[in-house]
Image (tube, rainbow, N blue to C red; front, side, top):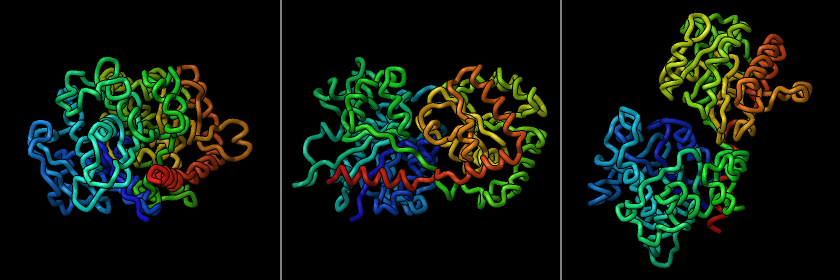
Length: 482
């Protein structure tokens, strides 16, 4: 029997993306289809989304959705079935979905994403005649109030039915979504919701906290991260609640879309290749280096990342001298903390370090295909997708032994090299000495070109798609509806 799942998310690749959440939300529907799971995704109607919605038709209207009228549109993005909230007073703003042009949060973000969760709960309870999901799946804090609206909204809309079970997925616990307790009534929540077992969180309203507490099951995006967030060091104030969820908390690794990330068919590359034609990869390194004035004979490190301390990239400016002294070069694609952006601008050096501030999807593909190694020295990493993309393209990831990085990269230690299974490099901690040691290890192994090629082929042979993880999600969903 086909299982109907309603996914509720604030981002969906390729329509709107600021990070990995969009990639996951965009890839899961197709990945779950072979498991006989049909996903319908609810998404805000940002200016970037509405023009791309195919065959859009009104499904229902709202006279007043947190301050103005709204229309729920049903449509498609390729094979993906979407429901989009067209509410200009909430979402009709250009640029980033969460912040204004100065980088400040939109002041009405609580209402904007409460509306997303509220509509999701209404859909779960039978808003659309003839369709009701078997499971609702909320992603990150923006959907955090979804289980709260289900829990505090009374009986289901259809007589003789029960509210469908909910799953809450944490993509990054650092972003929790909090607002003033005085907004409780504005958000349409009853007084009894403001309690320790409800939405109350340190004297305010916690969106993600509410989702963790009230969802039937909580997942996060790797097994190691699921364990880390139950500790005081990794739990960011929610570790006690997460420990209390016990077996209702689990980690399921993210995957990547193997059609989007395929070096054999990627039109962004100078030359397509696969593990059997690895020598053709050199043309992509040549193209990347030509674009930035770098020497393709050097060991080339790439960065495709938000430039933040979470990603450990504050370690890199001081390490550039070590890289260059060893004959290496670096190309950086990303944006983030102004201080880090300034540090990288100051460190830019012709022939040794090139910088592209911002994000360019085509350039990201070329970096994966042309760089020898990808730097991901994160202090914490729920899962990470860049290391999966890098391995798929034969670009060996250099990671910290945390979260999903620890779960997906096999370190080039002596045992792994002897057994011929290494796929990258793990360092023990995101601190300067460990980073320097690991960079030296990378440089040493790169000089053994035959050994390096074996590691590249190992990496390209890793299972980085959604197959196994989609099966785990399907089993979880079916277990909840039994």
